[in-house]
Image 1: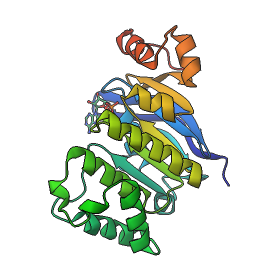
Image 2: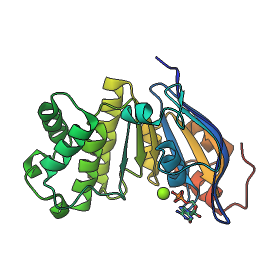
Image 3: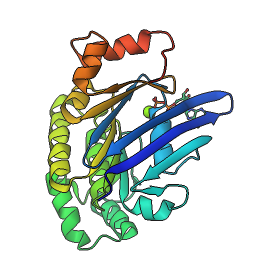
Image 4: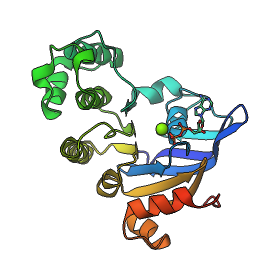
Length: 247
Ligand SMILES: Nc1ncnc2c1ncn2[C@@H]1O[C@H](COP(=O)(O)OP(=O)(O)O)[C@@H](O)[C@H]1O
Ligand SMILES: [Mg+2]
């Protein structure tokens, strides 16, 4: 087993004159849940998209599962997956069909059993014959999470997974993801604005501000550094402070 699942070194992304991500470096260890936090526009999604190989970094390197993403993209991506509250699966397919198509793409063995198991765990079984476009935002998010677990990923990237969930659903999803992580030992990178998510789920947190990582550590370390009693307070302190030095 590779101890460091992700190794990001001096990663940078410019979009024209905008520096979306400015020289960030971090690791994710095997079995770790890393939280990526920061105000809107801090660079979280851009970072996730570079880790998925969807956009090419301007500079820096990304190693995943011991290999360079730019050299070994296909093999690495087979062992990863991704869910976002902001990306929907094809609307005109039924719930079950959507999962079946992705299971075929990923080459999942015993795909029917796997799909059933995930639909049951995410409480979507009763909707399996429903058109995806008819689902509520919360149901679509849970479907997207099912899709992201079809291939038993070693590395799961989540972009605001609970953004459209009510507190009860969000709580269920957090507990489910924690249970799945404990069962499989996968690593997770989780971006969220929900501080409860982060506190409950993440072993370690990276705070981003304007494309830089400006604080890193456990929730308790972050609270101590910003003399805050909650992560929400720390988040606001960072979001409102002038440009901070990168760590
Ligand atoms: N495709 C793009 N073209 C131009 N600018 C972009 C693009 N994607 C993101 N940005 C800019 O990069 C910055 C970081 O965005 P993003 O990574 O989406 O932040 P976050 O996910 O933390 O809210 C923002 O200023 C955003 O406007
Ligand atoms: Mg984003």
